[in-house]
Image 1 (cartoon, rainbow, N blue to C red):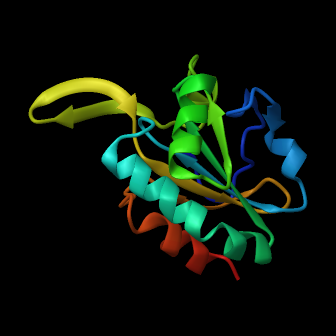
Image 2: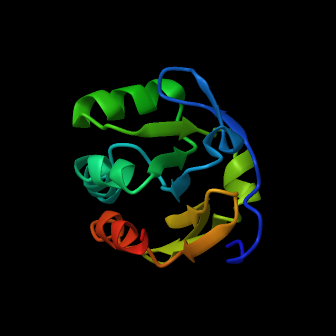
Length: 151
């Protein structure tokens, strides 16, 4: 996990429609950048729907939400359409951004060890500095917690 107070690495990734996004495109806004394991799984769906339901409140507070996983653009599009998601999903199949943000880790599931994305949420300020970093994310609670972090 990256340290609070450090500059967030810039990146360029395609969204669910194939449009490219850079972190630097959002200079002047707060960014909730969250990494999640997989589209359309129960926890990831709860988290995404929570962010989507609260998205107008995030915008009111001058923040955007960007979700990142290693799923494809097509998978993101299906996930967005199925759940009516109001925010941007970014596709990182090569794991460049996932690894730059230090969220590709060893995970244990039912005793089996594998590598995967550890659910992690970053709050990045208007100047690209990491204000909050949380890798102990509870999917259903994350959107409300992050809304509370915005002043």
